[in-house]
Image (tube, rainbow, N blue to C red):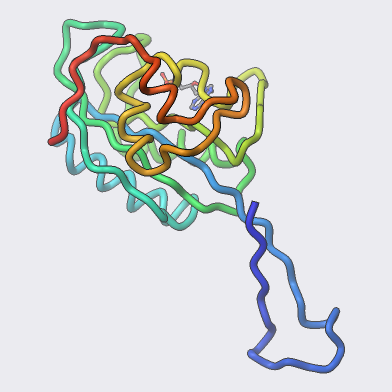
Length: 183
Ligand code: AMP
């Protein structure tokens, strides 16, 4: 967790407590995916909307082309991992992600169907969250090469708070044989 010091009006009065504010910034790792329409544009629009509705995108992986999973009779996915620094809680971040998905034309009918955009929360700090609508770390992360590969590019040494292994090690251990290519 990061602590930023912010000074009012650029002044440094003698009373320290009167000017020092502590903001707690959360660091979340997200996986973006698209397999419908102009996939590159959906990913870049998602990044733009995340900057508006979530926080600063501090890291972005390259784009990876991934054979479809779940329902395999559909087009390839384009995937990208990003890191966002945000003042939002995990639950607020999820709500804003759902709003962004809706804004980018995501329609949910069937599980694992083609989608203009999908945004998953992979990690939220090193928090472990299990509620009705949110599980973090993402429950399938360690089984999915298409998530581990872009994530390892931007933060390979991050330790999975449940499995206690780095992303790099999880990738080396992952036996999913889906084709994942750099674009
Ligand atoms: P899908 O977009 O099909 O991957 O599913 C999205 C739904 O999964 C959301 O409405 C969330 O309530 C739920 N969900 C649970 N855990 C996560 C997570 N770590 N990241 C994103 N969505 C999640």
